[in-house]
Length: 568
Image (cartoon, rainbow, N blue to C red; front, top):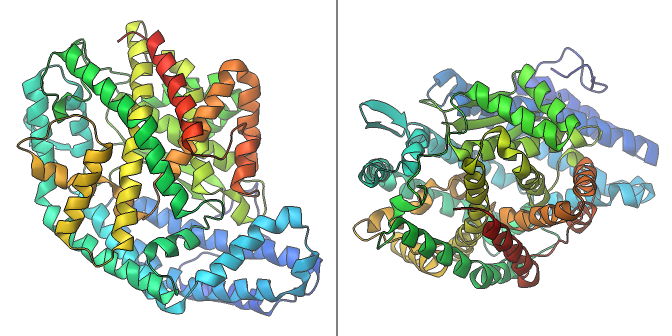
């Protein structure tokens, strides 16, 4: 139901979406409405937004419940009901309304500064939409749910207890090398049990996605995705150039850091279970023991960055808009979702007590603050931004919070935590390039075989990977991409992380010179939501929308200088 802050004006106040029959009359009313003047068109756009928010809220709620309880048949059935009986019927009706908008002569009377982004978005949606893709998109969503179900069921017996694979991450930091190896082998062996099934699902997904592209008169799914994701401000060629820049500016740095790690650990060769352990043999960082303590610490960090942001996190916590613990039957990963009608965020993650959990909650908190900042806009399109900037909100919050991690760590542990986070940022860029380049291959070669897919993955590992030795575990390396949920659930959604990282690092650089000014610019940019093009959103945050070598090399040098100040 809507909140008191955002009452309904178009949808009946007591309306509950339990079937298609609930919403169809509203589509009819919008279809038949007069939008011949700027005034009526403006009101119509706001009514349209209200209806979409009403529908999306139900889909979001059912998705959240399904990912929180992948083993609950009722949650699964409710989610599938939305996929089968509501969402597919909405898509052609939305297309009909989008065409109505593009054909309204009043569109020329609207304020271009206000409506330019919405206008180009709607026209792009009209261009890419095809009725025959609607059932394919439903089928794709079911494949995605199957991947979540398989991943959520992956449990192992280790040290006498049943554990999720997320919980197994704790062992990667244990100082006993044989224990780390045993834990890593146990986890990877369990993942390999599902390898054949996941390969089969992915085969079907590639074929289905290529059909969608051809249906939309695109040469391949890459072209389709760039249109569907409305990437107006960069091209596939820009992405390939970004890969090259990462290979040149970041990969050597990552390999140098790993050689240093091997030397400090006195191991040769460095193995995959040596990547997270403390180089001085100290016990793993233990930032919190309970989810409650994690929340307490995060609240303090957010209040330290900005009191208003801290109050927003307190509101989420008080209202029960967090599900943070790891448990059996829960989907892997973490995300922030928005209840579009009530206009409040929700955070999902799998906390087990690691430094990564702290980083994840702060990251998703940045997304949540973005939701709060932009929720005032009556147009749902403008209450969120393209992912390339949405991730600036989250990565920016990680970096702005770096100076406040003393809430979780004291003494030398604080330096360890900061070093870990900065080294993780560096390491992420080559992984982003690997995942994105892999997808460029997959979807521009839709008839590839499994063997060709495997060879391409291993070639990319050679290009962007580190120095860890996988001898004896070649199959694990060849199937490592199975754990990247984006490949299954949100294709071509990954390069955005790299673009956003560069924006966030520029904000961090600004904060070192003027912290108050950088935070004000950051929050001001978030308040714009998606109402401005990407270059303008970056500019508002104090960053350049550029991901060339000339941008990435200086921020890598900044991180290197910061690392030199920190103890091992």
